[in-house]
Length: 433
Length: 84
Image (cartoon, rainbow over all chains, first blue to last red; front, side, top):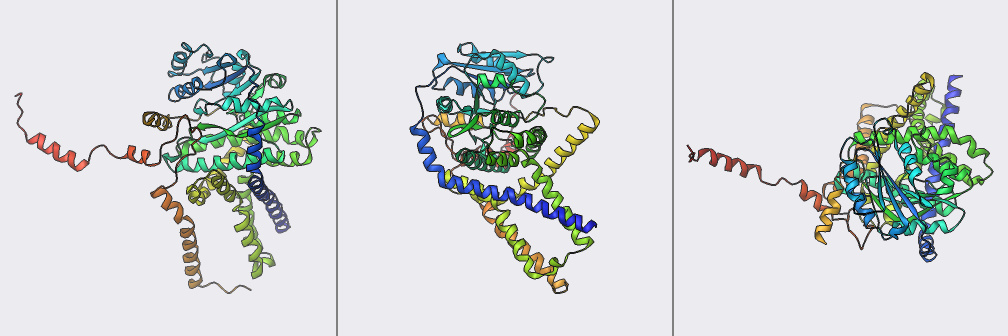
């Protein structure tokens, strides 16, 4: 009886993982087929005359090493300054973040700083953004993380998409600034290439659930207010808002050529903290939205399917671990006859080689489309991040269940530390030019 | 049925797997040791461009040769103290 249950479980796990692997191939092939056509069309149809008032929210908690960089970037934006409001939310910082931001606010009247004290602030990004939203006057609300450095004309590129009344939100591309720093930053850069250049682009091209990534994106103010802003009880406030926008019947557009640099995490420890928060938040969203996605009358079948795959993506590393355990148990308890048949190795090998290589293939195609010459030589090393994500996601799920049972709050926002090392890449270049 | 495993089977298996892993990771190690990729994607052609990879490598280089520093220190110790 136990063996039959294990076999059934093993088959279900294999089926689920195969669905994700097929998705990787579909996305990659879609981007290969449509990328040039779509980008060309996006440029030609961009409405440059549409320049509504925008508010840019920059939540910052102890970001003294990077806040100056993004504010410098804000002053260089080509968007009409009279139609622009930049709001820095100094979220209970104990360093010089507030003073640095004030230094930029004095000579630039479109930059404002909100100071939150220890009792009011420090409750996470969503809380800070909601505070910023109260002060925002723009028709479109943008969010940028403090460690980002925007492209000069990024606002024009993103705003143009709102000319379509069905578009409720827009997402730009994230590119790693400090990529050459070390192995971790290099691998994060590869993940970003796959995630944005391929995943997001494919979702946009195929009319699926394009994701708001929490930064380098914006919303219609009216829509954001009707959705009551950011949900402070969810750690992945961006994914939560993504689904609320789609469920409300609006679209999120991805603009691949609206690019912004980010400072990637530089150590395995910080990688763990960041991904643990993402995994836990994503799982919270899966519990909150999965049923709503299935029942929604605003989503088509393919959007529902993609939505469910997206919501549950952080469960996959846990399922991988489970499938390993089940596989070993099956072998130990009672090897089924097909284990001893030599030709059974053929489908197993095919699955391992063709299937498991799908995400690496996706990253490789992204690097190719970006014109990278040798970045994809590092792709085999992504196996380390893949393996590293297994304990991260397993712990996130275990902690989520523990907190549900014990009733303790599990939403502690473990902030990603930004060292400002990315500044050297900008500073050294400005010396050259 | 699969043949019964013997010590030779295990040795061949371990060697085979090790060789496969080495071949898989060799390009990655080469690129890590001597990066030839152009570095991060340049997103702002007319504003800033990302410096090439060697910039970081040069920054990590020690400012002075440690053996030279040691020799200078030895000479300084041997010199008479003019203030005394």
